[in-house]
Length: 251
Image (cartoon, rainbow, N blue to C red; front, side, top):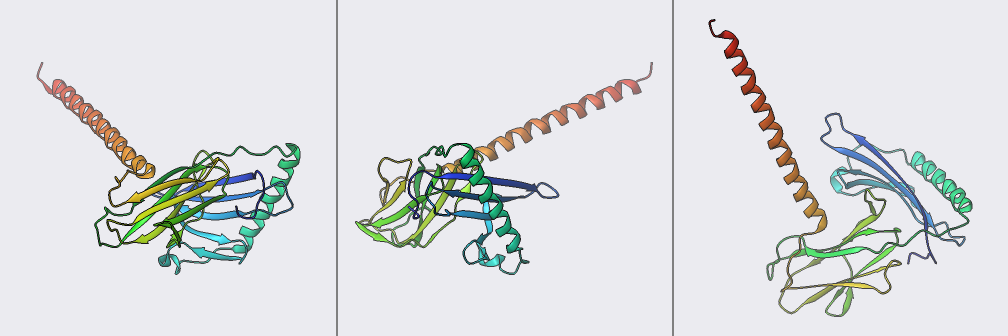
């Protein structure tokens, strides 16, 4: 996978910057990794806003790649600084590998979810999403199969970081649902003894992806906490009004 042989070593750097009003979070995400051979190994330097990639620096072409077209008109980014930072990470990785006597990193298998972007309606164009989450290292193959034949995805993201230093990756397949077609997302990773395959057809239930489930739970928690805070403030105001009324009563 990716031309690398054996276990990977990796070095990950995460920098989080809060906006002025804490409404958005900008995160710089950089990592390098390599095997025990002479290969240089892959690396990535990306900038996310609220866990959605804004842009990354293509290490081979030495240019900034915007994730979405609407970001193209934003200001430039110092590519030279990014490349220099990645060179430092690679140097540090080599030092850590030597100090650890080349002890390999542990492979952690992915959790895979396959679901349509919108509720599936027969004959209506849609998008199938294959999410591989919680894996390490960042070396994985996501392959789409339709009715037994490999098909090309519409798009595939770079690696996104999780807070536990694992990774997630999305692959997208444009399709038109019908009653006969069967789709598979086949996932290969060093943490799996054999490829993991997820199936989708017109009769499949639509699971709530873990990322969306976390958002729903998070929103519920925010609403609950907000309600508690409002209640406490309301009670305090009532107590202050009652105390003021007591002081105003004639003796």
